[in-house]
Amino acid sequence: MEKGNKGRMVMGIPYEEYFASGHRACSGCGEAVVIRHVMKAAGPNTIAVMATGCMEVISTPYPETAWKVPWIHVAFENNSAVASGIDAALKTQGKREGVNLLVLGGDGASFDIGFGALSGAIERGHKFTYVCTDNEAYMNTGVQRSGATPFLANTTTSPAGSKVHGKQEPKKPLPLIVASHGARYVATASPANILDLHRKMKKALGAEGPSFILAYSPCPTGWYIAGENSIEIARLAIQTRIFPVYEIENGVLKFTQKVEKEAAKPVKEYLQMQGRFKHLSAEEVERIQKYVDERYEFLLGIEGKKCFDVLF
Ligand SMILES: Cc1ncc(C[n+]2csc(CCOP(=O)(O)OP(=O)(O)O)c2C)c(N)n1
Ligand SMILES: [Mg+2]
Image 1 (cartoon, protein in one colour):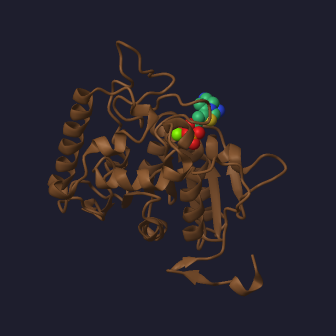
Image 2 (cartoon, protein in one colour):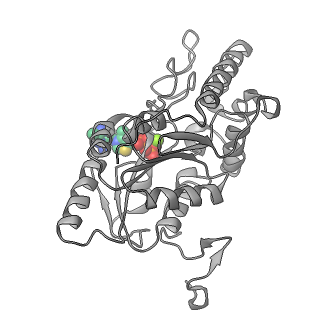
């Protein structure tokens, strides 16, 4: 970075990069945008623990690295277990103060394969901030379905054929499951609203115990979209209410970007921009619309109420 820019802020966000450019992510990769801004919020006094997945592969082809902080690559299933060990070790050494412990994983790592370790680490009350970059499939290995893949999306293991039209199951509500563990801070965030992502990261890092952020991450390769449309699609996901944006603080859910029913755009606008939904019939689009509305109304119904115990 040019010397003159040291300490410079743009709209409250550091100009300095801790996840350097020059990595090998696809153009328009939502995960890379999210990680860049997660790191701007976390800053230099950070240890990052990362499960295998696209972000690991594109950022650390030996002997290069895009990471300007200590970074450890661990197996798919144990990023939260490794972070638990780092948390305990730093505490034992009297070095825990002032260190941000970040745990990073894709949706495959977080919703499915590393879920047991994540659940255990939260239940034990370790202090770390988990960021799940959710591109709604196992992208690094060729677009296989995960617990985060939405209903009826086409993936290589939930293919859209003549009889079965894509994934038959709905998306797992991971933020609510994590909140149910008693975490003090849980939020959803999107690269379509960087200031909100930054603010939520700061809150998550400042939480007393474990915190969790689900970050929506468009994937041009796996969603069959043009890279330049990534952010527009992320915006549409919010405007159509497919991706509700909220935070759960001390057990109480609050929308941070509420979309009233009258103001919501039809889900069709979102679906028709993506190849992974191009097989859908008008009837199926209607089914998705109904499901999205019901799920959003459910969240509106619990807003402001203390729905989750807070244990830390
Ligand atoms: C235990 C284990 N199973 C499978 C793999 C192969 N594998 C590596 S990355 C990956 C996909 C990662 O998906 P996700 O966590 O969603 O991250 P993304 O690549 O989509 O960013 C898989 C299946 C592995 N490395 N370890
Ligand atoms: Mg993924």
